[in-house]
Length: 445
Image (cartoon, rainbow, N blue to C red; front, side):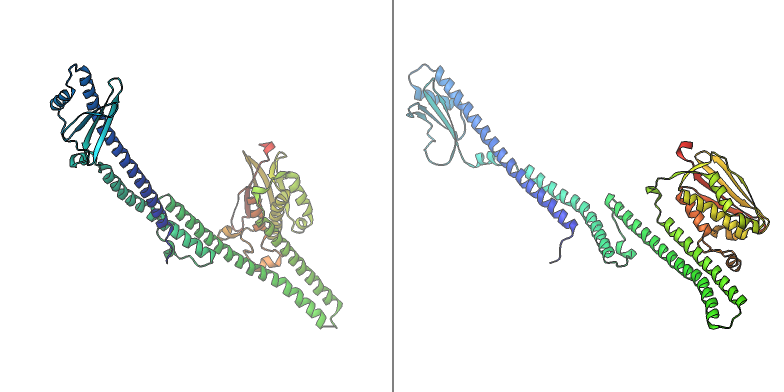
């Protein structure tokens, strides 16, 4: 047997509860109304008994039987049977209709001060049955309300059931790693649950698209890494094979090949180091990191000092104007990665005899840093892609200077992790200008 959906189970459960409640209510109301009508008739008969007793109390004659007959005649009550008895149950008077047989509704009242008992009764005939009959209006009302409730509940639970069924199917497909097609989860009702369900599906699809994009980028990155690693590895193997296979190679050539192998090994090491740095940045969670404070000027000065030989070889100069109060909330290693990679990039590509200018401007909650050179620059079409991993403006020239193609990607990631933003502008022959922000340290805000 097919299992009922949750919507149908909910509908049937609520209807069952309502039916039980309605049945209890109808039964209670039936008994209550019946009891009320019985008490009403009993009260009427008691009033008649009292009135009869009061009339007898005022009678001072000796013929009580005759007086009782005349009282019944003067105060007629259709189908009413009246019996007057003494305290010892001996009958003083009884209407001729009373036969002592049949079904009657009795109401008896004792009057101790008169030593009388008066009992009045009405037969259970059609008229009394009509009086005691329960008014079925509330029963019809309850049935009508039940029908209305069923309709309302169905209109409520049917969309609810569809939503839950769709979500259940959705969760089942996810659990089984089955593909989610748009026709599988097309319609959700226009209510709160439907809205929540649509948001869940939307978020899932967004995550799926993000996952697909990440997988694509991962494949591209893996391909690029393999390509970048293959080149220096192949060069090293080629030089070493030449040396091994040619035993009679002269010492000068042997040394030249070894030096080239060493240069390629250095490039391979730098590439692996940069990939490792980017991987650590990808795993870095700023929300769980409490940054320290970094005084920028001395940190940049150390980087420039460490690069003195490379700058001298390219006849490059560095002009620095960073205020002493430029203190940022960041990880020192990230700040070091930003300025070192920017300087290495300028040394590698700006050209000989160029000038690098590093400045900082107070922008309220942030420091705005500018790293500019007046070197060769690049075509503007390349600017949007300069921060991509392994992107090179000139593939041949980049390999000649030994770049890994990851320096600017490291710079951008480091700036973002520190809560800043970075941009680049420039033109061919006019150099490049990098602008980025870093948050001020709290004690300097």
